[in-house]
Image (cartoon, rainbow over all chains, first blue to last red; front, side, top):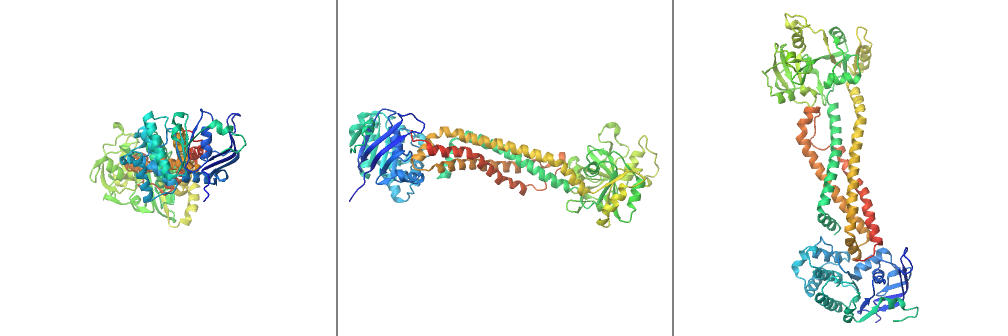
Length: 231
Length: 407
């Protein structure tokens, strides 16, 4: 049975409308297989965050195609891309993942609500994810701003995985954590996505983390690949 | 989810939100008060006199005649002679007349000299007749009937004796202390200037003035006949005759007289006040507009600190239109809260200020509830808040559409 690649980018060109020439992302071809975990590194300003916004369907390239799981993201409408993101993409950022005034349960519900998930299976998943990430159930009713940074990041993972996304995009999630917390965070994260067969794009400038992942990639090398199709 | 999010987000910023609600409440309160007072005053004014076809007095402004004869506001410029009054009262089309003689006062309340016809023929509101809450009409020259408010404020009961003062200011020197009047009855409350008046017979009034320096000496009080009265009210056998008689009176040869139609003159009086009313309403509306802009500003400023929030929502797949809705719901919650608290405060203050308004301004709050016309204003406030909240809501929408997820 043919499984489309999790990510497939072809002849993609993105340029910020008002920006100068160097604010440019150009990818001739890039493909990530389903279930892969990719570590992307590069200096700040190298276009990492632009790439993530393109993958999330927030930005659209001026040229080229972006396909996720065989769906051509670049051909969808605004509304369809937002719905696609809600259903199939989980995101975890550096900080500020949670709405501070909502409790943990409501923060998670924000994700399941928009993806129209309800019922016992959802409850089960939430319990399972909470315990896997060593989050006590009583935290559910605590306001997000009362949690430690480490707890907040783990809740963000629960929320990102609650809809069982095909793609998880994680942007510098460990920069606010100390090194012990960082390692356990990555270990737990990888365990969970392995179980779901979720594809992971992990962006960081900290190359010491690269060993955890199935492949690593410098953002510059992604851009350098000229029109020759390289996998 | 949307409403929950909006509600919790407002709670998280409760101090600035509370101040905004307070600002809105005050302005809506002002607007509703102006509107309510406007309607109630109009209501109360137009109910002051009814069933009277003509009011006749010395030649002066129409409104002026109405004001002093009915509302007891201002002072008459001239009297009319008893002879002319008798002459007109004898016309066949005249069914009844009520003479009015003004000029004295009792502790700040106007004294009106009249006849018992006043209690028989005067009507107010929806053609209601006067009724007695206690006692009965005056029968002797030195008896008096007092309005409900006079009785309540001064604590008078039938049988009490009161002393009238010459003119409107009660000084020791101008008291008619040698001729006290005995209260024979107290009228039921009407919500009109009647409540604030003291009624005596024309003979009684004449008697106290007869013994006054410059007055004629007197022997037999009951035979006294006033030289002049201030004005009189006329009821006709047929209303068709109204204009006819009005013309006759206005062309009366012996004396310059004037007859007015109370209803029409009330209308023109109201017309004069209309522009003031409109101005008040305009000011109130501008105050509200200011408050609404303040609310929009509060929401707009909050967007800066909520940049992350909006970004998180976008990352989760919420559409820009959701952010628009979020801001609009927040504005709606603020304005609905402000509307309800303004509504409650208005009800409360109407209840508490009722007596004061009646006493100071003669405005009777006939209904202790907000009038329908003012209720119509509430959806308009909601619409206005929606329109003004478009500014932050559209800004949130645009931010959602264009902002990248860089957290």
